[in-house]
Length: 489
Image (cartoon, rainbow, N blue to C red):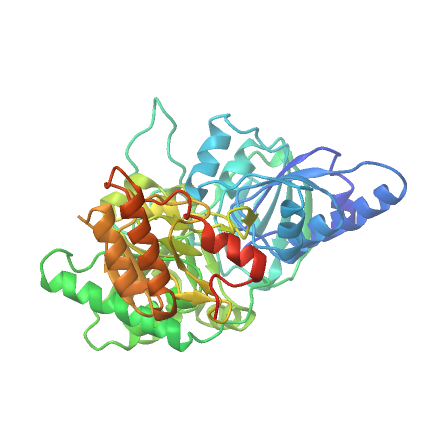
């Protein structure tokens, strides 16, 4: 049926379980039609709202359309849409920011309610109920399995390209859980499709719409410098015998992560690279072209439209290089720890004692969310948190006395990196961490401010183990809110 006809089947108050992870593989036409229907109902005086569970962020066709129509009541577990973000921060949408590796299990265990309706993008469905997913795994298998009713968007823009890419294995739940039999990023342990009861399908909508991913931008000088620091540190650790060669990498979203992969591709000393990650970005193409990609395992292929065309053109020869998993497997603590993943994630801000804020501006304003960074940071073999040393044209320091919101405590962080340098925090006391971070990572314009804060903390605190100055801890954040700068010029 048409998207408009399918949208008529959505009931008020439904909990929608949608496919999609970081703008890949999300339904597009049915949500847009639902938004138009909702606006008509609201104009007629009806209160029509729905809640949305996903894998992670979706495109504007879903999160943007539904939020601008005022249809979203409750949203989990991650988002990156400006319209939706504004409504969350205005208190108009209830938003729960959750570790991405935990979302699926929480639904399957009944901690969270199961979706009443799954709306999932796929490339094919068979009469027997085999659903072949598109460019993301996310939580689609969980939603398809548990939802009472299913709407499928069959996206013809991919053809059958993604058949054979997916491994839709889901772990068992306690008390019957068994080890996940993955000991190599290339291991496949499940089926390439999701098996459902075809009687649950209430609509099949055909479409041809590419994922709305932003155009890829080449890493800037700061990103390249940070990437260089990371690769130099990895080489150093390998020479010292503290870091085995051949460990897989997890790289977060953004320019810095792309810069690291590009640097690996161009490094003549770099051998084969395996990824065990969430999001596979198009920077992986440089590894493919250099003949250095072993396998890339993740839960989404987040490529720009141009890169999607390149991928489709090469899909037959590249297929054995990729595995798309469900996110509770791609982000599973057991597998991450077993494989010895080297993790690289982006921070909004870091403090001098080793805490990281990944999600909130000035402590209260949600940006996107914690995502899966903690799934990897807590369980990886070696973990980096990366950020430019300043933001907003130098008005804001990314290294602060105390983070305004804590996503990753000092117990879970290992190495901080900015373009100024690198701070290995492993085995350091709080005061040692502070001195190292200020010296190696802070921008020179903020070093004296940070050193003054540490001095005040040591002087003020009777217990010197953690020299936090409570009366001064958030001065820079308050000054930023008042003036738009963290210090006078």
